[in-house]
Image (cartoon, rainbow, N blue to C red; front, side):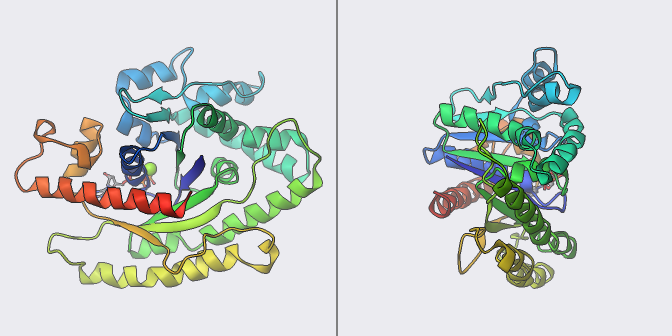
Length: 329
Ligand SMILES: Nc1ncnc2c1ncn2[C@@H]1O[C@H](COP(=O)(O)OP(=O)(O)OP(=O)(O)O)[C@@H](O)[C@H]1O
Ligand SMILES: [Mg+2]
């Protein structure tokens, strides 16, 4: 089982849409997939679950991820085990997100201070949510846990990232997306260094400590204009700069002297995993139908020339799913 986080500090770069499509594609090639919606905006949840299911998950005795950590937030106790929603007839599960998950940020911020002081409670609280998610994964022979995160460098993302095996960065080749990626490597390196320093100072605990060794495993390039079957000039220029950015702002900080005892990158010549093309109006159609673009049919409103996009999307994601399996296994 591998736990993969999808992250970019810049919002709206397609993290959620890509994660959703990749999960369904991995399932199509025979994998058992568990999504965890750890972005309090809940866009991934909305992509998969009906409003009734979400409403139940947020109600009394509900099973959203907030319900799992509610006892910690209110001071009533330890993490509560909740069950993910299973997509009917598919090997796909999702831990339902919750807008109230942001209430956990403050608690996690205190827990981080406790970690830095090598106190047991800090490790326990910080690891609690992902531990619960991973326990479900290992008890149910899940192959991939795909974690969607909000676009910020806050304490929830820090807590989750430290327990993931891999992370992937979806990027749009534009000025803002590149700027947004400049501090990811530096901040992650600092978190990992501090965490591992504290971890070496503590004794064994009665639960498994997060490894604190998430590996940078590549990036996804979003939103090419493929209408004319070639990249437009403006996109091309920014896209060409990405390998340099990756080297300077991710690889270098994650392989610095201070972190030399850890293995924080998958060593590759080319960090680009795939292009995620611009599917225009098929994306809102997919959201409405709660299906990936590559499973849309005429019943969902696909017409004429758009079938080509549906087919292209299937091919693109089958290749991407295989590339991920090859890279991360
Ligand atoms: N391949 C695509 N083609 C066309 N539109 C897309 C594509 N991917 C995403 N979009 C659209 O771009 C917007 C942002 O996508 P998405 O919500 O996946 O980004 P995000 O990075 O998860 O955002 P946030 O940071 O808010 O979580 C959405 O409106 C989505 O419908
Ligand atoms: Mg999102």
